[in-house]
Length: 347
Image 1 (tube, rainbow, N blue to C red):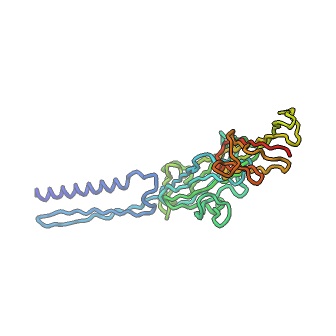
Image 2: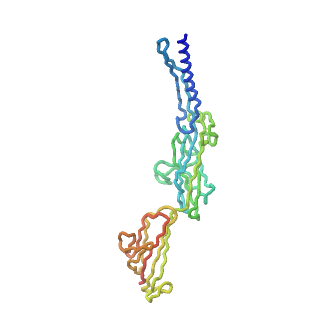
Image 3: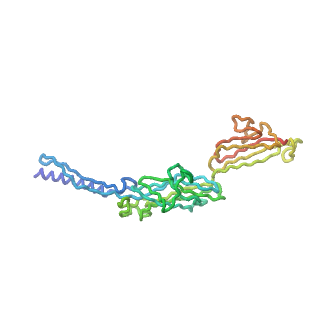
């Protein structure tokens, strides 16, 4: 009797441990992120091995089966590292956002933009070509037209659908009004919401019976099945300007400055101010000034930012060729100002 009693106690103990493990699995807290796909059926069966009077025996429990519910949640993250530089006015400028399904089942999401946010100097305007575009995957970055054009979003028609743990780039495309000051900023936001009935805005943990992928139950995730992110524009798109003035140096009678008279033989200095303002880079910036036929260039009189340049095509960035002053600056980052001066005499 003692042997049989001891073995019965051992079997009961093992069954108790197995049932405790199963109950833990059934009641473990849900993970609020993509993991085991919604609708997955998980089965578990306990097998016991024991020896009775020298005979090895095994026995199995019933199979405990449960189905993984769907967690519905979404994230939106702005992708631009800094405000997008724009001109005033400007058209079809894109802010880049990343829409992610952070639940464990397939979901469709609606998208809404908001142009009127506090804390900025102007409101971006929904672009004439459309305000929200979905990345087509044909070419990185926003493409408004052509063979690699991104897809115009139309609410209720092509709401983006994402499998669990997948993402899609979304563009907010805006026009910028005129007469804005350099440095003014404008903000716009994008919001996404699950299209599963009752999910968007519900309290985290809300159960939606039978509304998950494949008809399983669904749970609203930590973000309440909604997300929002903000991007910004800053007026400071590249602006290049140039102005030119002339100063009388000396006439043939020896008069200088304001008392000099322009006549054959008068020496003049041309002064050109070239400015690149805002944000960005002016590529291949080059200055060319063909001289009037009524003037003659004074050799070796070119200066750039006060430094003398030779007339020849050589290592410095200026030359006098074919009766034209040429100065090459190449790729020029804003902001910067250059002053070019040279002399001529009147024929």
